[in-house]
Image 1 (cartoon, rainbow, N blue to C red):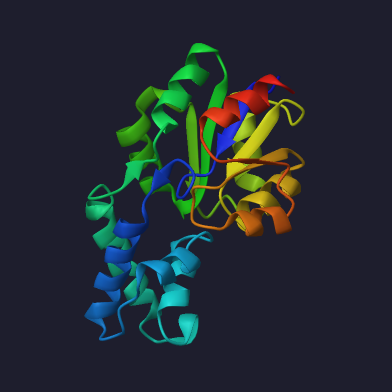
Image 2 (image 1 turned 180 degrees about the horizontal axis):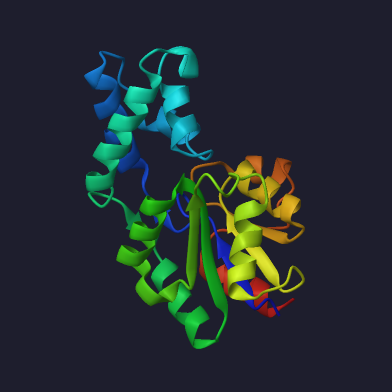
Amino acid sequence: MFDTLIFDLDGTLINSLKDLKESTNYALKQFGYEQKSIEEIRNYVGNGVKKLIERAIPDGVNNPDYEDCLSVFKSHYKINMFNTTRPYPGIIELLKILKTKGIKTAVVSNKFDAAVKELCKNYFGTLINTAVGETEKVKKKPAPDSVLEAMKILDSNKKNSIYIGDSEVDVKTAKNAGIKCIGVCWGFRSKNILIENGADYLVETPEEILKIISNK
């Protein structure tokens, strides 16, 4: 049985697309750039906010407004990230069951660390044991650093740990960390992308995660 579950955040535990879209478009508007649709934002997320703004702004990092636009995004998102963001149906119930079973839980995300910790504190409280976001000290996913850091904090090993995410970045992260991966089909990417990138398991609902970890 797996005793440690390491979750991606956006698109896995929480649906944050609308708030990400609003903060991206607010930042773009300040510099006179075209607004983005929810589907465009869906395709831009997954590699951290720097990459999100790089993909959203014309010419990416070569745009002279890039750094300022990123700064405006962060400032706006910091005070607006709870507006419409909510846990996916069944997530809170899943986390409560995991806690009663004594299973250790972590969140690893490419979102900047302060936001990751605030979101987890606000929505999950003590249901998540630790949360690791983007910092200068930890390489972003798909590098395995954040997953390995979470496992170190939880005193867990690779054999009994499993990673859960919604994107190709998550599947690659799990592979790079040397652990199994559950791909969730309710997130920001399609089931086909998860299959193409080699997810070990696929689930349509949070409840199915319990079956997988129990049948190891």
